[in-house]
Image 1 (cartoon, rainbow, N blue to C red):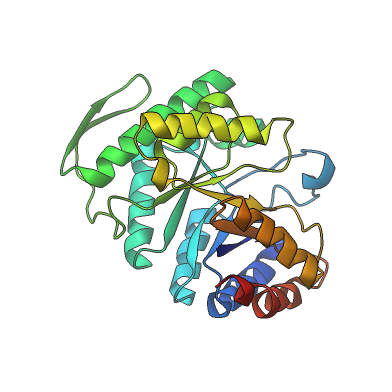
Image 2: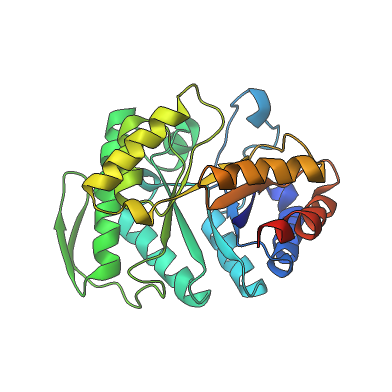
Length: 285
């Protein structure tokens, strides 16, 4: 079992906590740390609503800073909306960070959902178009990461004689993490995903979602390349060590290869990850 640190909001006034947590996790045996990729969260209501949700750091620049401060931990997003940026630019950003970090990037892949940030910084489309753009944008990114020169003529994106060098350190490209719920995104997860997280919310059937993913993986002849991640990016159900061990053990018994724990923001964040590293992680080595 490999452990990921999540719940790492990119709200500016939390950055010192996030930075210190990732620096600590780097030394404590965590495999990875995942940040959300949002410019404007907006008023989402419920547990995600915050008064400072418009005050954010740019996630990929932040991950580059953190890569220079860490030695082992993998760094990635949960997740990056492909239609939000030009996919060629995003491919270059990710490749550069993979080189600078010596192969420690996890590329989160999503279609986006925050209308307020798309209208503020990009272009908002209905769900079908965003997913179409994600399919096509990811295809262009994969070509840029694996081909010497790319000519691409899609419905939404084009490239003429595009050369992306240096290539990513990871071959053929960085691990792709998906965390979506819609059927088409689940199928894309099975076709290309390395790490797949099924969120514990959203009004869908996770059992049926896994079936959809694995059917797509079978069609792509890559069933053995899929790894599932469980846990929570929104806060733990418990901080009790024995309960945590049971939760992780159940996930491991179900075949999951990754487990996500969330960084608390109640003043116990660093204490919690130290306790987890000392009392839980050794049981799963």
